[in-house]
Length: 169
Image (tube, rainbow, N blue to C red; front, top):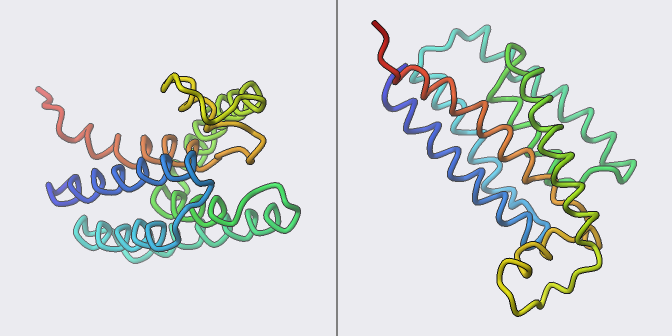
């Protein structure tokens, strides 16, 4: 894997972490950042020499995920930003890593949901900083599922690139 590809994936990870923080603080995932992450997929695919058939396959999965998330959005079960971010995450991972990504995002999402439920009665204007940070997860404002998408997706996007850096015999 080319070094520039690793750099792009680390840049994507940084953007995903920024989105996670943004989701916790404001319950918003800026479209510009989400689309930038999607655009970086195409740059990475070009640099890595991904065959056009694979790019189309990744794009097809992103469309399928977007349509499924759109249904959840209409049913008020998922936010619009989460739907866009999920599509972009699955654009990156493709069919080959989709089940692993879905599983990881689901596990992290369960933890985020439990934290959100446990903190729903907390006052976000706590004086003690760790409690104030925890109160930002409060389900009273909705569950910040972008956190699960960012951490789970970021892990699956970056790990393959980092594994190539580990020297083998």
